[in-house]
Length: 457
Ligand SMILES: Nc1ncnc2c1ncn2[C@@H]1O[C@H](COP(=O)(O)OP(=O)(O)OP(=O)(O)O)[C@@H](O)[C@H]1O
Ligand SMILES: [Mg+2]
Image (cartoon, rainbow, N blue to C red; front, side):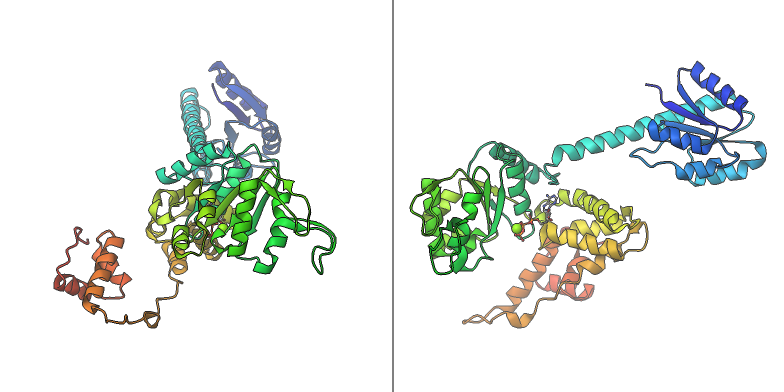
């Protein structure tokens, strides 16, 4: 496909000459007698390439260049200029023009410039398409998943979405559990039915039954009218029980009954109501540990844990960091109207290496603040570093001295080993983690006979 070329010139003869040459080569040509006319035409049908005279009455070529709509792939602009105004043409190239040609136009040079611009359009649109495809493939309802671990999660998610299986989503705080729960619902045949999220940690124990199962008129003092519970309200859809580890014992047995019988009874109600609801639960607690401690019913645990979706912490899937950073960069710079376009390589390195105890939610917060406070087109290392170090240092007084004492040296040695492991063997950075000088750190490494398999530059 030959590109569509917009030829802009206020001299009719010049337009005609260029049109004839280009059409002779099979290009499709549109012409405009002014910058304004060109803009109006391109609004209706975008051109792939613009060839414009520099000096025109009204809007000149450079003004046209800057007024051009910026699509995914903005069309390259070639400026045509008379000999005397080459300086301005060079200026135009600095302002983003693709190339410039001097009058009188040489046919060979014209065609060469147009062909080069056409190739560039092809490359750029191919890039845009590939990028689109990449994100399209790995994103499901806005879930960014480039790492193999997350792609596995997505594959399992898609499979389970087709069914009505009960799903348990596990993962650290901020790792995307709720996002995944919603994605299951909205990719399932239940998508047009309600998705109800209940935070089990936020409902006072006394209100739980009422919230989940509802009540009949006069069921208890103060029960005004009848009320549907959340389980009933989710009929046909999905009930998401977040922080399931905080469900009170009394409620655990009631929930178990719902799962077994697939029906609910309102408080004070006589008959049971059949319900068809998919249950998804989430927790960042070690629920098996809770079962062992007797804080969570074992039978309920097995009922809920039919399919497990385990979200790895962000630090164990660092491939996702770059696309997440790019995603939040676009989102927040658009939201705040900030001209931040890119993240410097140093800043990116810092983001990739960070431990992210708060996972994706923390990364989003760091990006939000960094973009809000940055004042250039590039997010620098400093913009980001300040946000990362804001965490409070560990307070040593929080550590109890164990009953039968502690081998302080062994403790120190272990921390040094851990610091080195965390930094991939980089002693300078490991020293910084332990608030130590590089020399002091090396001294201790030697003292404890710890070797780093990597030398610092
Ligand atoms: N893979 C991802 N792609 C895009 N956004 C994500 C991803 N994972 C998480 N997020 C975003 O990060 C934020 C936190 O995610 P979410 O609320 O699902 O975490 P959570 O595991 O439920 O956390 P908590 O345990 O603290 O409730 C949300 O804004 C979510 O949209
Ligand atoms: Mg959550």
